[in-house]
Amino acid sequence: MPFFHHSIPVRWLALLCLLPADLAAAEEGFDGRRLFPSVTWISLDELHARLDSVELVDVRSNYEYETLHIADAQNFPLGERDFGNQVRALRAASHKPIVFYCNGRSCMKSYEAVLTAQKEGVQDVLSYDAGVFDWVKRFPAQSVMLGESPVDPARLIDKERFAAHSLTPAAFEQRIGAGAIVLDIRDQYQQEGTTLFPAVQTSVPLDNKALKRYVEQAKRENKTLLIYDAGGQQVRWLQYYLEAEHVPAYFFMQGGAKGYYDSMIADLVGSKH
Image 1 (spheres, rainbow, N blue to C red):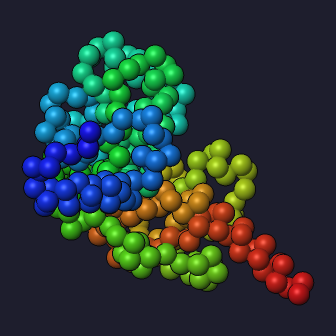
Image 2: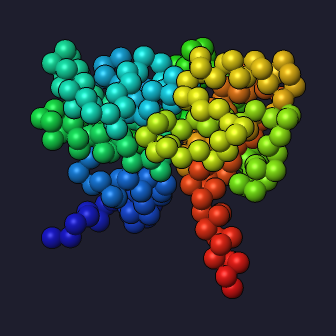
């Protein structure tokens, strides 16, 4: 017997033929859905509709969370040792579905959080994989930036704005002088006893309260802040704080300390040829 009845309108059959392409288009940009096929995901609109009936968990670092997050989300950083304990405690306190999220479509942490939770024996867990940026653009009133809500989506920093404050390691080093304040925001484990600019830099944790004194000094003395991290990623979140504080001049090192060492190796290799 044929799959479809002869009375089905031809236009419906045309739509059925398009379904695979439409489904593929719907998955575009969500590589995690292919890489983690066993993980159940929830869409942006569905999460918004069900927001009061789920437990929402931000699995990014605490600094990222404090900079920008979805309102009422809890913060369980995936990389911390007690992540499993936190998820189990949440399940013991609530029978609502648990939804994990991170930065965006290319971030795999929300999928990994689901798998980790399941290994801990916690079920009914999902990934909201569109991430915090898509959420803020659509629902700014239910978003928090640096402790304030609603969030103006215009304050979201795009790649171009970040690039405008990024310098190559060589250009970064050339800027060091009396008119600059150099800050190393790597933690003690990332530093591993190494300092790029020992005579002029200050090591300070990635914490806005700790950074405030240097931000105020830069504004008061009209100096440029030169800041580097381990790999060029953490400074992306620091930029929100610097913009909120209206720092007139600041730059980051492209690739962070890793980028600096990579450039040194490239120069050594180039000098041998």
